[in-house]
Length: 325
Image (tube, rainbow, N blue to C red):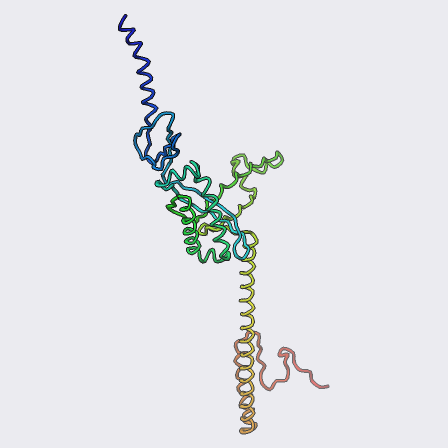
């Protein structure tokens, strides 16, 4: 009986002591740091590392910070130097500066990344894109990325945020919409399909609308419809200019060929005239003989030629000539 009374007297102090000890201990898991807040002195300027630590219950409180690298995507649509709308997506790998965690807690709180990164990311993107034309964003991609990275690193350091990686990338396209439901074949059309024909083969005969083509995956920029139309019109104008240039060059070549041909004909005429003056009728007779040879050679190869005996004036060989009365 006395032992039970002594035990009941010890239970309450032991429970109170265990509660105080448990309240005085806190654990900092891996990848975290703790900022200690004191009700009298405020935030302590030294962050606690991983492991088990002690604090004064009720007077002190531990705030845990995740110091591991976290990814974040920042998307914006802004105007370029030539007033073209460009859509960019920035991927940032960030973590807090562990030596300045107390300052981050005092100025920004635990959601520091939500408050800082979207605002400075959009600010840097818009300021950088405004310095380049839309075409330069593609041709000078490395320069644009390096400038965005440097400016964003400097801006993030002002808020004690470390950026491990900054890159411009093209987000994956949204999933295609689900296909429309299969059309129901009316009873009047059903006899045209054989009974053994599967239903999905009948649906294949219905034309479907082809989905719009996605943007170039190798490019991290998405331009507005006006810029795309302007680029297409520029390409068409360049093709028309090349075609017109070809037509002009072709006409010039034809003109030169006509001049050369005319000069050759004039020279040939002069040569023939000189030969006529020198040889007289003999040259003309020689030309007639050559022409006769060519005509005879052509006629000898034709099947529709009938040879008439020399000295006969009657072309109708089967009809005797009429005798004079």
